[in-house]
Image (cartoon, rainbow, N blue to C red; front, side):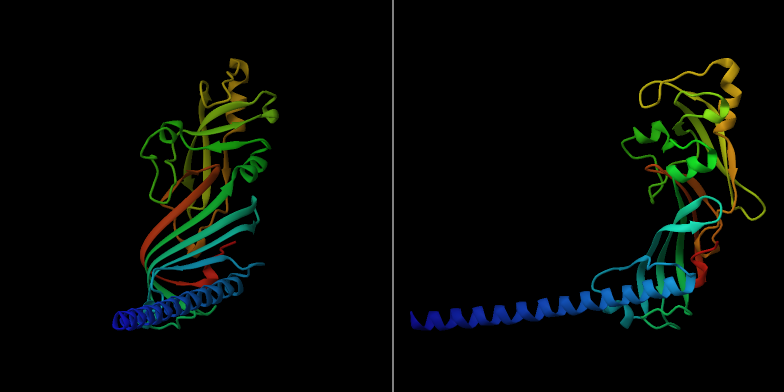
Length: 271
């Protein structure tokens, strides 16, 4: 019986020791990741002339093996409420896949350049700021109803709807019409530098999930014109050219995806 007690105590001690080592290793790994993300956020703030630290995340576990291999699997950088000269405020996002650190410290500095295998770049404009620009303060933007009701989501991998048939609901008082209506709107990108977002109203929507308000024939053209406009100056982070535009939640999002690029952090904010 005494022998069994001694063995049991030895096993318990060994397990406790291993557990302590594992917990300590995880803690060190987590701490290193947090510090690297903090330094990255500060570097982006400095380089891109932001008034606050953006949200920065270096994904993948364990973390320590990534800088030792001089390679980050994925980096996410997000900044909300960034001042914008045209719409007032926008959100900026960059998702960096397969980041080569061969010529860069694992603590990314504001002047460092990053070699990126694939870059996703997004500019986000919420319904409130789109509505203010259009002169429709109560505007609500929604994804196309056929996609919202689709069990697969009907969206891109990053959650962006298609650019056809978005639902814009609001009161177009500037058109001389004081009732809330829902309008089908298509989005497109135009301009020599592909930075102008075009809103093209195509018709009035009624039924479930809409304002369910028809528009008299003599007001129709004016109402559609109130929901049609062009929004210039939509420059994506890191100067990426747009590849898609649509809605996510109640936000308008322009996205660009490119492969095999070298970027600088001061390119995160373009305007």
